[in-house]
Image (cartoon, rainbow, N blue to C red; front, side, top):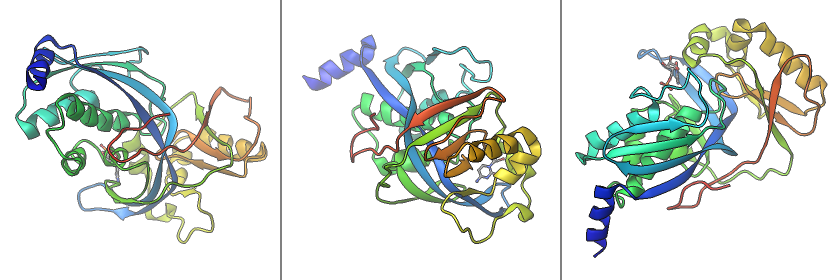
Length: 283
Ligand code: C5P
């Protein structure tokens, strides 16, 4: 009966699942050098946060994607990581299905918050649920590595020390946090590959004297002097720690402080989040 209902559902395309797709921050990010494959070797503490997109998935006749925000930098064709994830799932399982996705977009693009990677991981999870779990979590984790360096993290439980390109995850217990955390996003972004290209060995901070540091700040600040100014103003505003997330351009601000007004900056008040075993992230 379940199988009949399931196949009828697949045929008529009425199975629907809505999942929260969280952003991440890098509480520290060390770049350990350039690898022969062109990527950089990283050591970074990743944490999922309560800022995120809402994705509505259903099995349809063909792939279709729509988004609440019209942004030319967010493609709605097969180059979108959501549809790449669907294609990856088809290739790995030889299952044939179409995927319809509508996105309520909240995570800013080019912010270092992993929005595209999170959407990709959420898609792998959603398809697996819609198709009644043909794949194991270990398989989803393996496949996610082909989609992007940060995708795998989102299949962890939300707090992980990540090495390699960022795709080797070492789960750690949830972090206690009773201090306010604000993400501050300038009204411009930076391309991840450009920031990594700008990185030189001299930008490495060496042994850190703070939990919060990011070796990609120096190259990002060379590409945008305004970013350094924003960090300085945020520190002057009273936050106890201010560190760029990933390749920028958003900053994680710990504690209480004033948001500078000399240029447009969007603040998001967030919390750390974790998912329970066998279920997806919720806020
Ligand atoms: O893996 P992903 O496609 O997200 O990476 C985007 C770009 O960021 C890569 O093409 C590469 O230029 C750079 N990158 C890197 N080292 C990493 C991760 C990303 O150089 N560990």
